[in-house]
Every structure is written in structure tokens, then in C-alpha cells.
Length: 417
Ligand SMILES: Cc1cc2nc3c(=O)[nH]c(=O)nc-3n(C[C@H](O)[C@H](O)[C@H](O)COP(=O)(O)OP(=O)(O)OC[C@H]3O[C@@H](n4cnc5c(N)ncnc54)[C@H](O)[C@@H]3O)c2cc1C
Image (cartoon, rainbow, N blue to C red; front, side, top):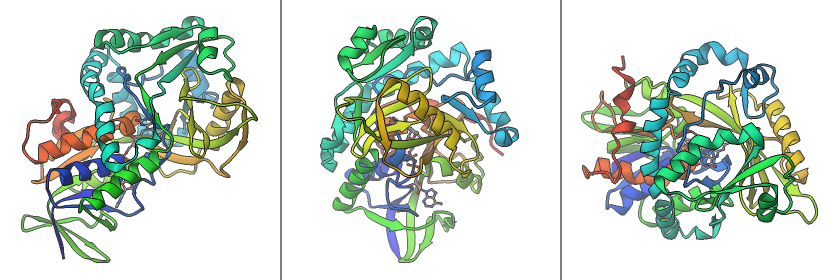
């Protein structure tokens, strides 16, 4: 039998950060994953640690965009019609949260979170000795010039409100930052405070290693058989029974179905995304992540090559990779950057765990004692991981969290049945 104060389920960026913060505060912590740490969503993302990000990803409303989505011609958003009936209630709620009032609430909530994210990454990367993966590179948003540029209006407005720097760039300005981008017809926004990493999986693994060095325990096990017995949490695994007083669910895109068994059916959907690595053509290079806002893809220089990540794919989480969306993104990416041959044989596919209000669930179960939730970080989980881990540890210890966590309350979707 292995006893701990807290069992953390899931060793993605959210779980390892939570486990590390709890351990740093002196608790006995067991971390559980059925895979090696950092191999799922936290492995395959675009590696952006975003200082901006004040507007939720909007529900597409432009009729031309909707037609492109319907006919499979949008690399920014793809929709599997077979998944539509199941997705409809979630999509309807997501659309409702596109109201101006919610956008303002979201910006206020995220404004405070984003103020802290770089510092929280810096603290964990120092403990984990993973600073070498970080780049203070900023990131570059590209817009089709003209009306396309107005897509960034909300983001720019809130950046001014929160005092976050950005620079508007014309074609020449973009070329001054990234000489190998084809900039004809593009305007740019450069966000100098944003950072990026050259391997999100390695950053996640490094936090896990630091956690183990600090005396935390890791067990390879499936979380599904978790049971509450006489006020204790019990989870059988190959190496015996894991016993804990508290449990934190940090299972990312798998959290929704897991929570149902405890009477908490959260409206968690996934926005899938894909990546492939490419060699740059001879002599070409990229210094920072570049997002093509019109086509929804990101190019990030990574250890393995230039990582091309796609926009959103609304499909069943476990469906086969959407090779058509990946191919479309590749075609469009080649128009702006000289990508050489692909490094990977197959595209990687992962799932952004998303609530319809684009905010995570971070707090205590209303139904079951000593059950805590930390999941649903959507497009920004890699950025928010270290801070979310800190907030979770403060809540469990009964301390006042560094940020007001009320907006993340598990109870906010109304009485759950
Ligand atoms: C294409 C793409 C690009 C992205 N780009 C960025 C970006 O640039 N910046 C950013 O901030 N965010 C980005 N994100 C979002 C970010 O990657 C996620 O929000 C984040 O990784 C979620 O972390 P997590 O720990 O919640 O989930 P995960 O990393 O998926 O971890 C969940 C863990 O739970 C484990 N697990 C699941 N079920 C069980 C079970 N039954 N038993 C045991 N273990 C289980 C899994 O094995 C996994 O290790 C991107 C996402 C995608 C898909």
C-alpha cells in the first residue's frame, strides 16, 4: 500500500505542475498516468507561452468562413459532420459565450492570469532545470492585409487596457523580423513579451523529473478504477494499492467522462489539432512562432524541425487523424515559408480540452469530498499549466489563491445531475 496526502491523476503539464507545487509545499504526493509523463496533448502543442490571449477563440460567424468549413476548405476550422449531432449542444453554448459581455469577462479573468504566466513558468523551469528550452522570442501574428487585420482588434484593445506591448508591422516590418517569410499581402502584429519553447513535451517531462527528485512518487496506472472507501481514495495498480486523502483530476481531454462517475457531467468537448515537423529549405530559418490568423496554423521552430500545428478540428476525440486538414495547412504554410521535406511519417493528433466558456475547471467537486478538478485549459493549457498547478495547491491547502478562482468554479454550469 502506498499512502499520500494527494493523488494527482494525469501527468500532462497541468498534472505535473500541480504535483510539483503540492510537493514544494511539503505534501506527500502520488502522480498517476497510464502513459509516460507529457506524452499526450502537452507533447504536441505549438509551444507558445502566451503573455497576450485576452479574447476567447471566436465562434466562426462569417458566412464565407462557414461555407469553407462545411466544404472542408478551411485549415483554421474543420468539422466532421458525423460528430455534429453529439457536438451541437456544446457548439450552441460556445456560440452563446461569444457575447460581448462574456468576451469582456473573459478578458478581465485572463488579464490577471496572463500577468503571472511567464513568472510561473520561470519558477518551475528553474526548479526543473529546463530553462534551455525557453526562448524570449515573442510571437508573430500574420493577417491578410485590409479587413483581415480587424480580426485582431479585440486582442489589441485589451492589450492596451492591460499594458501589454505589441507592434503593428507592414510587409517590410515582418520581413525585418523573419526574413524567410513571404509577406506579400500580409500585415503583422508582434507580441514581444510572449515566450516559446523548443519542446513542450521535454518541458513537461523535466517538471515531472524535478517532482520525483523532490520525493514525489509516480505510478503507471489507469485512473478509471478509482474508488472512495471509508473517507480515503483508493486506486489499485500493479505495484499495490494507492491510497490518498485528496484526489486531483488533471486528465485533460479525458476528464469529462472520468468525472461523470462522481456525478459531475461537465460540458467538456475537444478541439483536436495536428502537427507535423518539417526541415526548412536550405538556408531558411525561423526564430519564433508565427501564426497565420486567417488560416489558423502555427509554425514553431522546435528541436525536431519546424513544427506546423493546425487549427481546430471538431471530430470525435478518438477518430483517425484528419489528414485532409493537415494537408490543407501544409499547402497554405508552404505559401508563406519555404518548408522542406516532412520529418515525421504521420501527423500527430491531440485534443484541446475545452469548456464552452473557454475557461478551465479549477476547484472542488460540489458532490464528493476531497475531489478536486484541474482541466479544460483549451488552447492555452501549456501557458497556464504552472499557474494552474499553483492555484490548485493553494486551494487544497486552504490558502487564498493568488488569483480569484471563482470564474473557474466547477459549479458554474448550473446544478449537475
Ligand atoms: C495542436 C495544438 C496546439 C496547441 N498549442 C498550444 C500553445 O501553443 N500554447 C498553449 O498554451 N497551449 C497550446 N495547446 C493546448 C495545450 O496543449 C493543452 O491545453 C494542454 O496540453 C492540456 O494539458 P493537460 O495536462 O490538461 O492534458 P494532457 O497533456 O493531455 O495530459 C492528460 C494526461 O492524462 C492521462 N490520462 C488520461 N486518461 C487517463 C486514465 N484513464 N488513466 C491514467 N492516465 C490518464 C494522459 O495519458 C495524459 O498524460 C495546444 C493544443 C493543441 C492540440
